[in-house]
Image (cartoon, rainbow, N blue to C red; front, top):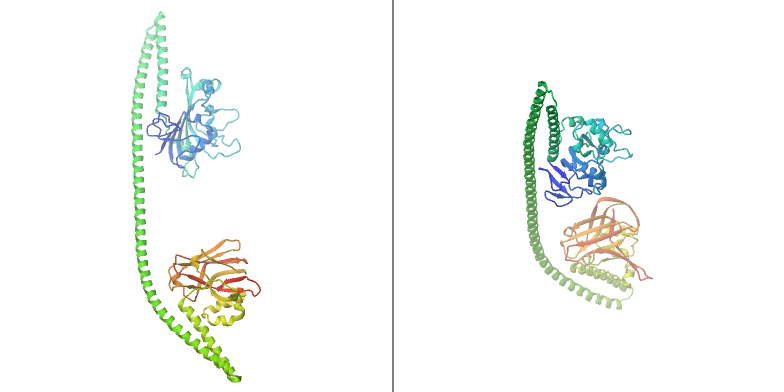
Length: 571
């Protein structure tokens, strides 16, 4: 049970958490009552504010904050100086007014258990006035009890006379105490009506109020005793006092003694009740400490479990990294063996090329001496050997896996016009045929040369501007060539709109890429409405070997510009 003594000063009530804006003895939490309180919503079970709320800058704002932190059904005990005092009017630290009408502006509930004579006003008959400015303050705090404490001069008067003087004069009432219930809607109360809460209400009041009430009774009893003694003296002075008068005096004295005995008994009972209340508050505070300690231990255990899980994950990652290093070591050994085989093949190919070159020299000599039909046959044979020479060069390029950089001279720009499209396709893998057909239709690359682009590992990404629009895009297929088969690392693409917005990002492992094969990227969701000028970006990450994209390079005969497009198709 969370009990708050708001503005406790140096006299915090037992079992309460003391809150004040100054660091004083007994203050547990330092907080400014003109700002947000350091408590969660719907967390407070009982709140006491004794001689503190009259000091706030804006009373309604502070009451809203009290309403926020209190649960549905929370009891509020508010004690404040009664406003109709000349001393209060002069006090610069008393900024808010407290009288019998103050709580009327904290609710719009029209009824209250308090006698209507206590708050009578000719212009406001019902109790709740919170919506009188045509707004909704967002609070509903309903009053159950209201008690006024009078100066000694007026303490013994009948309640009706006290009420009349309080409303007509100043310096009649010293302070006022309200007991209220925080109401957050019928749904929060499980359907219980407000009258049930009023019937079960047990008002809390601080110890000094109980003592003040007893002192008032003692002073009243002393006044009554003095009056009786004065009457007895007058009777003794008057002659002819009969026996009946003496009996009345004796009976009055007996009554006074009985009242005194009853008062002492009530005081003893009140003191015992106070001790019991203090013990209950101390027990509740100890239980709250035990609960907080249990919550702290549970949090530490959860943190330890999370740390253990993290260390286990790190150990598993370390084991996986060791396994990966072992696999990479094995792959390197296999690659070393493959390099020996490649060098042997390279030697054989060079021998074949030298033989072919020698044969071509002989053929040229034959062509020079032959004429007519023999010359035509020689020319046909020479063309066949030229074809063999081109095939040998392509074989050498494939074996050495030597990437060509896209540094194009004027010879490369006109190569497509001289070689021709059909002869370019002859030496390509058959899987590249559909990609070339797609590029010829959409990029207009019929006279473009196919080359290997630069190393993707040396740049953040390679970007291609797509010069046509697409209504739908579900997959991208293009030709990738890693230098070393089954290279480790990541290959990815990004689709970027014409307005430079990244629409999709797809990755795959380089180990899944086939050399001189077609790689397809399936998009996680189909893109629609790609406008002309959208971008295709290709990148690699975490690899130490060169990776290139096959490109179509288109040059101009009359200009020095060169255009390059990926060997790609979109579906």
